Image (tube, rainbow, N blue to C red; front, top):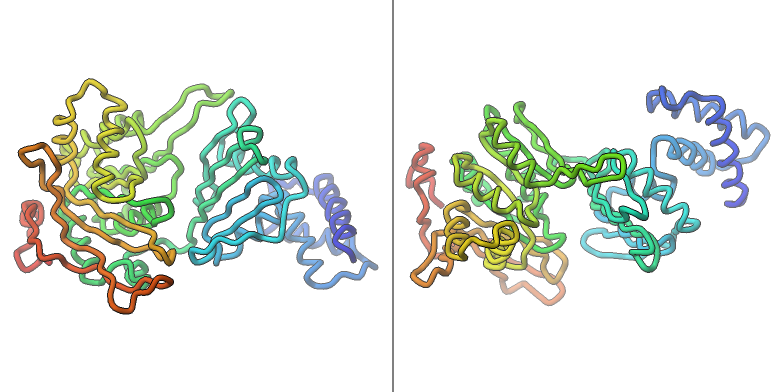
Length: 416
């Protein structure tokens, strides 16, 4: 059977399923079994290979529970970490840090738009010509960004950062070579001692992944509030967990719920810690104030190319929401709020590494930041242009901000 004939048969079976099955009320397994039986009935006397029959079942099932055969097959490939759809003809995927173009494509822009509307609709959001840009997520937690044509000049675009089925742990980061066991143990002490930790890095450097691993060091008896644009964090072992997610203004619900309002609301929820997925704007001031008003042990991330750049970007974000604040006051707010900054980077061989762990000490006499690097990534003799080899190593600087460690019951022997 040709691909065209298979497509026609799939359309016919999909229509039969719509007429004969009460798909909305069926559990996933029951629906798949019913479709399997329907395919048997509709293909009696028709020769199909096992792959073609399986493709029929998957395609029909995907029209009710998935996102279409093409996208479902991509999402099922565990080697793919990111999907970039640039119009219906150009689909790129990332595997092990390498981006390649797929041979497959959507039939036309209308098919792509239908998939986009299905994804956005299932997350309770809307996308339209009036509101052509949306951030959302898939049921498995994968992050999705959509920009419709004609804002996207070459056709509607969709970018999906896939969510790992296996929760990220520090043990896995050790396995990837991002940190050593000794550094992981030290970071656990910092989290338990309630240091405010900020994770910075460029696009695709693994900030959310690292935050997820770090957050699993939070003691199980604490109340934790997570605040995200699109919920991605997967914190385990904390029963008293409240997960909050922003909402864009839409035609049917014109009230926007932004990061600022969620951070302010979280302060009335009696949190022990606040975890902010990523700060991008004026909510930075609210986050810093929360860190400065009894919510030690808070965690967050931000986008920057170096740890120093991150502090400058935080200044800009704060001033966006409070332009009348003197720069010196902003810097004091930042240095008193953030104890530790961890910077991640995507290196020239596409590997993701932790390159800096530093403490923010304060300001010097010229009101510049005093940053004390505790660990720095050093390349070794085996490093080449194509392959980076090295390790995060302890600097010769002594840790200065030890008060929280000692208050938590740790001793000099616990300092690394």
